[in-house]
Image 1: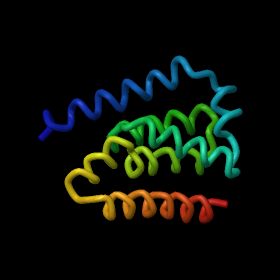
Image 2: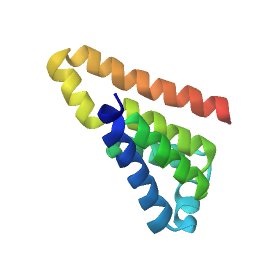
Image 3: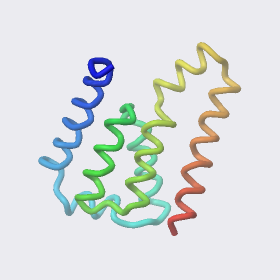
Length: 120
């Protein structure tokens, strides 16, 4: 089992290291430091575009939080990167159908909205 999850751990820590080493704190604070709709929308978009696994999402969200992102933005990124991934939507559409894909999208957005409201 260790071999099966090894690649995901390496990817997560590598992406986390990239965020820590190359993304300035001021840039993360400016983009994701608040808890408003703009920051939450940006975190949602970045998470959906990241197409990372849960291991990578946790490591990246921790790095973002350490660099100045709000807790809400970091959590939204984590939820979006595991629930709103574009490639996953295509696979779900092909194998299960558009209704399940729509439910996955709406469910992910509702989960993000409820979490955001709970953290306000």
